[in-house]
Image 1 (cartoon, rainbow, N blue to C red):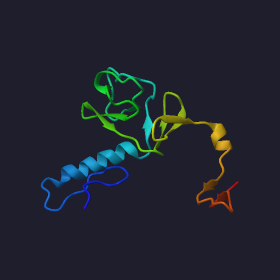
Image 2: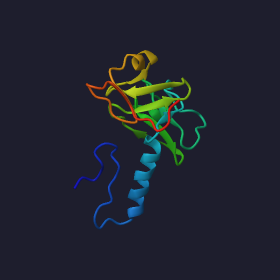
Image 3: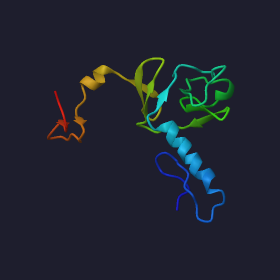
Image 4: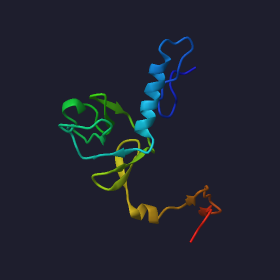
Length: 143
């Protein structure tokens, strides 16, 4: 059996493992960081001088200081130190400083523009859209 989940690399508790709470807490911390992902900024190459616990950034190209070698990764300030997550293609988050939605395309973080949303080939609200129904909506209450 693998030691971590395939998509978020969450650690699994192993049989006969001592201190199981450590592995469980590590997985909880990763979920707290990666679910409903948002970033303070995506244009900084150096860590802020006085980060707050839980702040997240996309490390811009040319990272320096504690961020050297972490370009394009997610930097999270936890327990007084920077922790890094390597994004996977399709991960998305909201950049608070820019007011934009961004998606990792496998190489770089790319802004999702309103024109991309306007030109979407399929849109599903509350249900999946498909080739025969490119717009599909399941609504409990609508105006």
